[in-house]
Each structure stands twice: as C-alpha cells, then as structure tokens.
Length: 115
Image (cartoon, rainbow, N blue to C red):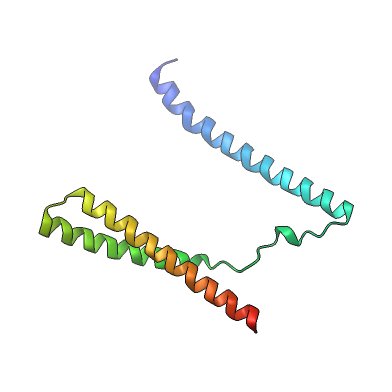
C-alpha cells in the first residue's frame, strides 16, 4: 500500500469507526434504560444531579487562557523563558478558570437546594 493511499484511508477509517462507536454506545444506553423501565427501576439515576453551565465553564476557562497568554508573554519578555512561560501560564490559569466555574456552580446548586 502506498503512502498516499494509507494517508487518505486513515482519516476515513477513523471517521467511520468513531461514527459506529457513537451509534453502538447510544444503542446500548437505550437498551439499558429500557431494561430498567421493564423491571420497574427508576431511571432518575441517568438524569444529571445538577445543571452544568457549559457557557460559564467555557467563558471562565477562556478568560484564564487569555490571562495565561498575557502572563506568558510578560515572562517571555522579562525572563526570556520562551515557550515554557506560555504553556505553564496557559495551563495554570485555564485550570484556575475551570476551578472558579466549579465553585460558582456548586454555590448555585447549594443555593437552589436550600430554597
């Protein structure tokens, strides 16, 4: 098999494999839920316990990444750290943004439970 044929077939096979995997996962989830319903078991187990705000997570993570880029730039210019400053600051402040989103969501869920 030539390199060009192999290079073309890998993304095609990967895409088809991903599609088939998603279909089978959804099928087995549905079969499991139907079996639980037939046995009279509550399906509340599958519902999310709390509302997850994807927008809040994404926005705080992107704010953290932006601050990380800025501080990485400042480290690069002042201490000549090159790529290390960028990557470390992006991961640190992106993680801080996701942590802040978690604490905000937990506070919101606790407030809703107390009401």
